[in-house]
Length: 151
Image (cartoon, rainbow, N blue to C red; front, side, top):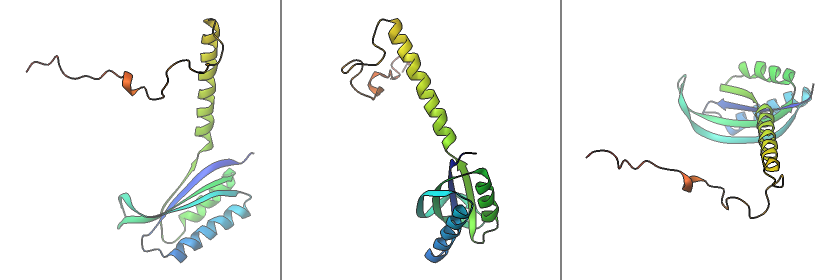
């Protein structure tokens, strides 16, 4: 099985010291390297307000990891993080699936556009200076001003 890309985000208690955060990051890095995965990015977001109260906590220390590995690695990380003291929540999400779906949709759109252009006798790809000159289509939007309402 090929390695997939995942995002791991976890929230520690707001009272966590920098040393405790670093220890947990080291623990995650050790598990990932032992299970044959790689960490592409580690981003400590710092102390932030939670969207809702979890237990007695209104704030937490967020850390994001972008990982490459297999399903067994994610199962092991999930198992270990469930039993970690001082951890409020964690979430592991596979992100490469969304990217592949977006790539397939983009390819399908491009091919359909090329077929339509060829059917109209145009070159398959847009030429410089052809079509709208700006990316923002907000100017063409029709807005309702309420002028037909009775006063």
